[in-house]
Image 1: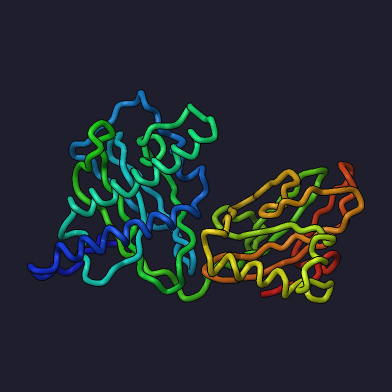
Image 2: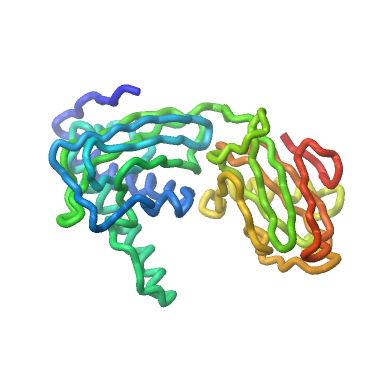
Length: 324
């Protein structure tokens, strides 16, 4: 995809635009909250490895664009540390015309997020905290998955080399403008398995293969707890979980987006339920690609470590209802 070179601003507008841009970058960084932690941490980062800042080329390749997520791969021509991020396009702002200011604002915003993350760990008594470069910067080839995006909306995906010692940008800004689709381009089904105290979610494409990039949310609830809620009944399970999913779609910070095969040992995803012998449970799984692609609700009785159930969302047994 071609690099975006937007039109130059009028002489009197750059400072105003850049001030607005600071807010936009912060907004864009909140989007990264929905990226898995494994993406935020750089697996290939080696603090002892060599790195360069001169004449480094960054390759950006957008591989998937859907209604609520964008998948992009990055690599560098030389070993280098670099920052990657995404932000909603703001009218009247031209990042390419003010590259240095844009990159400095992005680094400042990333550092703020790093400090929050580091302080949370320190408050929890964790003293082996990764430095900024290892936590917030990339090193080597990476695949990045941005979620929590809005359908039919323009976004900037950008990257630039960073000197990890001086914390300054090096080289030029690489930027692409991408428009998310109006509707999901994915056709995903979910399989669900319970074995012992673990439960597993498998998002699958039309060929029955696991699709690791599709975002979804899930919850498991004890029917005893649910009967205390006036909205819930056996017939109203779909309505109850529909509103549960809808709340998290309208308030993305509550979403806890999952990807690919997800396994949980008895914590009910976003529920505090403890599985107990003989209790009836519901697990709801909702596609989260810019809206509901589908919602599947499974009902089962937990029978201890010996239980081994495997459900597919095309099977009528144990499925309360299927929302598409």
